[in-house]
Length: 114
Image (cartoon, rainbow, N blue to C red; front, side, top):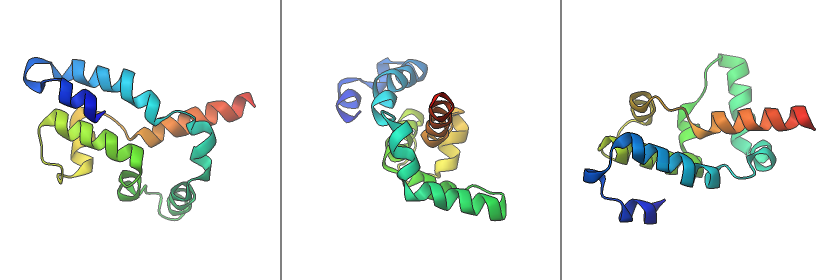
């Protein structure tokens, strides 16, 4: 991702195109094999247990995942905001959801086939 970012000048490319590049070149690498490694993450059990008790998702623990950090850095770079800006704001402004939700969806599809 970072080599792609250094070769592309943000001034000459639209945000929509840059986001499409991220989704087609970087996102598949970040989520490769998530059907296998996602259930082994300790944050998944933490999220499920907390959701059962509170009915709320802990976005701060989601944002600490390495693949989410790459997505968040991309979104913040795309928006032109500081790296320390609120994660929820960057997800909300771009209309994107955390990659974890897409990975969970892929994992459920995989388990239905098995």
